[in-house]
Length: 302
Image (cartoon, rainbow, N blue to C red; front, side, top):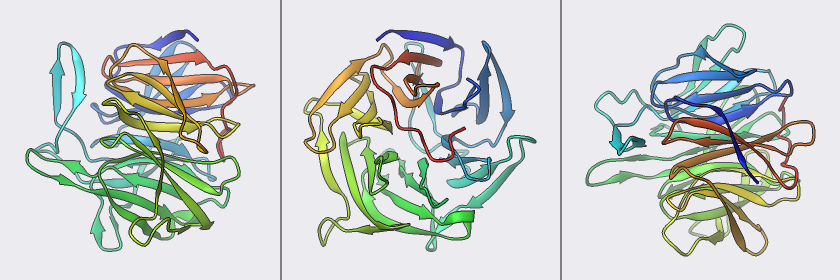
């Protein structure tokens, strides 16, 4: 499988959303922008500021954004690398973007009375609600923990499902919608949560709701994820870069390598759902790869 580079010069792209017309919308975290790529060109369609991160289409056709509030940035030999909470941190929040006008609406910045620290990724269920992760926020000597949350259809309310994870990142649903998958970056682990109903989970133990699906033995960090049509979880992988494909039943895994140390996202599209769009973030590129089997079509993808 070979990477085709679609766009360069981007400001840490993430959160690709694939449309049926062949266009792709993604965020640029460093510049606080939302960008569309189509027919070889890129254009800015909204500027929420802060740190727009994960993105997904909702049942109303709007784009929903996890905004982490921003990062402090470092340059490592020409590579863009996000770091701690910055001096101009603008607060974590969930936003709705009208794609026709570019208007940005803030939906939530607190859940159950607690401020969101670094919302990261989201996925809509078949009922019109969505699950999202809060990655937390890192500081020089400590870290704010993150968790998994649910927003009800129509964004009428939101609640916490589980908290206390080191660095929740990618989130996705199994093909039957009965399992939520969550990647934890610093732990390099994939967790699974059993769905008991819309916005409800069955705890795996009295102490933690998620069960460990698997992890990579060597030092590897997990980022966002997508699910293949057969249920395999495809996890964007940092440091030992590429896409880690993990069997949700056994935890067995293999790596499809890439050339960017911060390979952060994968999303599927195309008529046969075998076009994999991958963000190569530290080098500011959007890439496309023909996958060897189809990805799972998301709810409301179109």
